[in-house]
Length: 297
Image 1 (cartoon, rainbow, N blue to C red):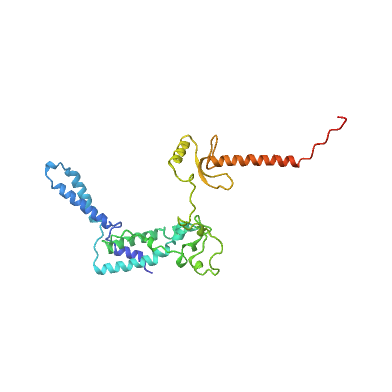
Image 2 (image 1 turned 60 degrees about the vertical axis):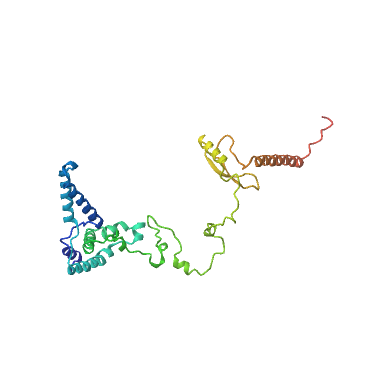
């Protein structure tokens, strides 16, 4: 049985192993012209001719040895056919799916080293990339020789949510697939969902913020002074029953704020005092009467 990798390497034996890309050839050609112009410049330009000549020789050698060699039409067709055979029969069957490479389940590392990371498949990948450059040396696509586009996927039409792997290092999230959602038999949910709670609320329906919770220059300056003094600020809800407004207050200090306004603080004190008086009166009313003093006493 013939080896397609060996046959492909024979067909491109005169091609460089790591051919230059089109943008590299263009940049080296421009650099070569610049050095040729520098060598022809007059003496008074102060050109370092030795350095320019050495760079010119290096660039000329790179273009001669690393640029893809042109192929005649018959040979190009043979190389293209053999390259497709190597990709379909050697490279693609050895590539792990996208989800396996991303989530790394049990056995993924060994499977990669035995397949895509093996010397034979690596040799096939390098030969196929060199062959693609020989077939289309002027192809400037960035992913022209990127073999990730050949990597399979186990998701299929079910979508990426169908690839949950409990035994993987990155297991993913267990969720309904698009196919399951499309065939859901129970209709829309009858309770408020997290998605409904996160939906956009128009400005005319949103509750107006309390003035003490909105940004003001005075409030911002007070927060800056508190942070400069080493006191962090935090959003806090007013402790007065029935208020519920949010405001910025220090998290610690000699007298941390618990109410959004001084008036609410005074109201809370009054309510606390009235509750204490009421509790004392209730305790006095429910206490048993003191015994009457005896005549002998």
